[in-house]
Length: 145
Figure (tube, rainbow, N blue to C red):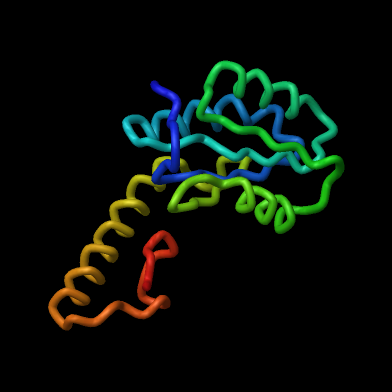
């Protein structure tokens, strides 16, 4: 695939901690799920792993230009890792996942389809009423003003 230039539609933020046994399979399954989408695979946030996770992530990043690996100097916990990942995400829509494959990457396209359905409905309602939807009714990527 071609490296995404500019603002992609989707970023997937995945915090990992000591997931050396899972990151290659995670990358493979994420690739299958997002095939054909303009979606980078990261940032993948390494939360201070002490196993071979950082080395495997660097290998993946070297082979796949859509992957961005960010490394915390120590384990700060999942919430901090997500927050740091959000700070570096480039997509208009950000989806979270996990490093141990408890969340199935194949669910991401279904989530995006539902988001498109809701966005289309919100836009149609706004056009019919002549009103701008409230920020609470809009996906975060929507400008509301």
